[in-house]
Length: 148
Image (cartoon, rainbow, N blue to C red; front, side, top):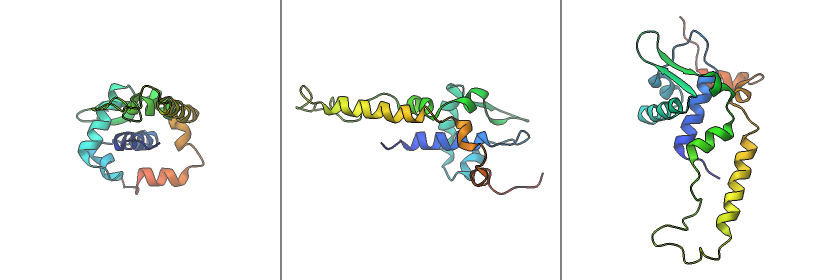
């Protein structure tokens, strides 16, 4: 199964925020640059993850992006489910509809496969993705250290 680019960007954002230092003030533009993602795509990911209560975005002086405690505890399965939705993996109902849909078992098989995929991701939390010994991941996600 291939995730949409939006889900990919959103997961990268969550991981980056998970390794942010307490005193670090990250903006959408900062994270977009670090993760090599267009600003507009990152802004949409920030908005959606904020709506889900996983990311807090504060404007103004002292503002920035922050992963919420529920964002840190969230499973990758829950996040991917929310972002990918539950639509069909194949176009049975497209226009024109598939002539095989009345007797086809592929749709059900693919649905079960997707749920198995999500179930395996339910075992992985955001926190576990960035916890020790993930020093290399931390370095990559944080980028080069900048003096205060």
